[in-house]
Image (tube, rainbow, N blue to C red; front, side, top):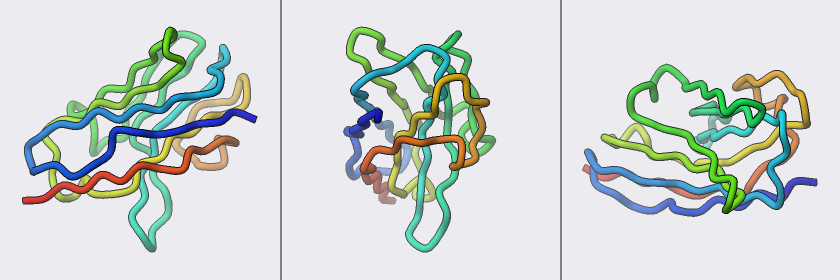
Length: 124
């Protein structure tokens, strides 16, 4: 029901920064929205999430201090700013949205809408 489109991925050198954007057909109140990453052959894992009821955010341990997730109410988008990138950050990054009033977690089962993904490649 919610259409999500990621953008902003690309190839960057280690130590650089990148800003990913997730444009949504709608961002409803009291909804969990998150960024996940996935490497081929592995399961998707959470990076950061934001609860639209109060804009509370939560970050996966490996990304704490290096990423920021924000909501742009005017553009109907969720952004992910990534800093000090390393080769280990190379992955496909996905945007996801939950149903209204869902409990926000990094379990993929929490989310019912997904974007197509945007590739991030960090070179050394």
